[in-house]
Image 1 (spheres, helix red, strand yellow):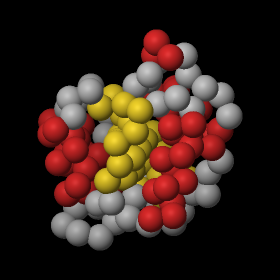
Image 2: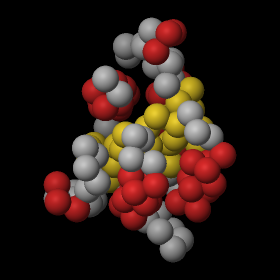
Image 3: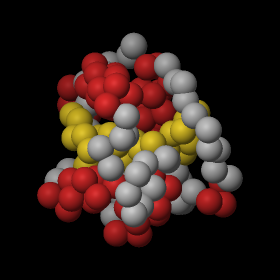
Amino acid sequence: MPRIAESTRATILVVDDDALTLMTAIMTVEGAGYIVIAARDAEGAMQALQRHAQIAALFTDIHMPGMMDGLALAHETHRIWPAIRILLTSGDAHPMAADMPDRGQFLRKPYTPDQVVGSLSGLLV
């Protein structure tokens, strides 16, 4: 798995309600050299976004419990913090381009570590 240069370390907010998937994503993103903040749902993600101004990208699952799913989280994030890059993922949903926030990208599950890192790197250039 490629690593990013130390001088370009960005902070990524990783959101997934499945504990194993979340831990795997955290290890993948940290292993590539990024700084990771994690949340288990959209409410926790919104709190993290409000507390951590340095977040450069949101990597979120679409299907999550609660009042807001990952797609709604992505739109709200883009509305409030338009500079934050967005990477959505799901194993069963595939949003149309028109349903995604501007410049948002989609990565289908199951994904490989290289696909995650490549997608995030592409978003952050």
